Length: 152
Length: 152
DNA sequence: TATTGTTATACTCTATAACTATA
DNA sequence: TATAGTTATAGAGTATAACAATA
Image (cartoon, rainbow over all chains, first blue to last red; front, side):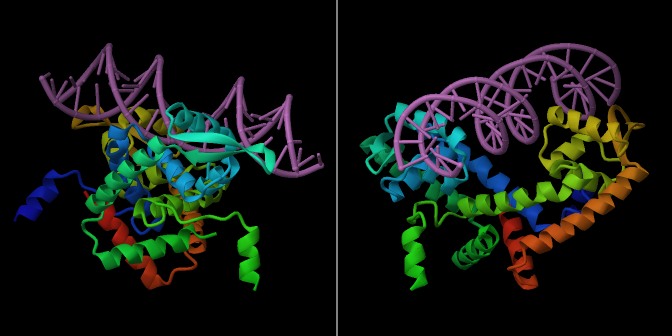
C-alpha cells in the first residue's frame, strides 16, 4: 500500500499537545496566508500593513494618525515611519486638522486610490487561491467564527 | 436611543476593503489569542514558542533539531538559541544520534515533562477563556476550517 | 493635566550567508 | 555533493520613554 510506504519514508509526526488547540491552528493558517500575501503585493511594492493603512484611510475620510493606529493596532510611534513611507511615495497626504491643531488628517492621493484599487484586485485573487478548499458558505461561517474570537 | 448616542460619540469606523477578508479576520483573531497566551505562560517563564517545542519533542521521541524546526516552521539557524535556552534550563537534553553523527536527538528531562504538564493546564484554561463565545460544535468546526487553510 | 505627533531606542522574530563535520 | 548544526548578521515588527505643541 502506498500509504504505508510513504508513512515509513516521511518524517513521522506524532500527535502532540498542539493538535487540538485552536490557537495553534490559527497560527498555522495565519502563517500560510501571510506567506502568500507578501509576494502577492510585492509587484506593487506594498507590504500588507501599507495596504491596510490605505484601505482604512480611504474608508475613513479625515481620519487622524491616532485613529488609524487604533484601528490597526499600531502604536503611534511605530506609525510615523509608515506614514512617511506613504507620503514619500505620494500615496497619501497629511493636512492640519482645523478642529485640533495637534492632529493631522490623512487622505489618499489619486495615485494612492489607483494603487489601492490594483492591490484590492490582487488580494481578491489571493483570497480565492488560499480559500479554494472552502465553499462560499464555509468561508462566511469562518468569518463569523473568527469575529467571535477577535471581538472585544 | 443609546445606540445612536454611542455611535455619535465613538470614533466612527467605516467599513473598508479589509472587512470581508478572511486574512484580516485571521490576523485579528490570531493577535487577540497571542495577546492572552504570552501572559498565560509568563508565570512559568515560558514563551509560546518554547511551549510548542516542548510539546513536539515529547510527542516525537528522538526527534532531531531539523525535524523540530520543520514541524514548527523555525529555520535551523533560529532554532539554535531556543534549544540552548531549553537545555540551559535543564528542560531538554541533546544526545548524539547513533545513526547520523551530524544530528542531535532531543529529549525532555523530568523537569521539562513537569513544566510542560503545567503549561498544558494553563493553556487549556486560556483556550476556554478565549473561546467562551463558541460552542463545542463551533470550536470543532473552526478547527476543521482552519486546517483546510493551513494544509499544504 | 492629557493628548498628538515625533524621535530615539531596545527587544523579539525572522531571513540569509558561510562555516564544520559528517553523510 | 548534500545535509545537520552552528555562528554572525541584517531586516522587520513591536514596545517604552521622553519631548514639543496643543487641547
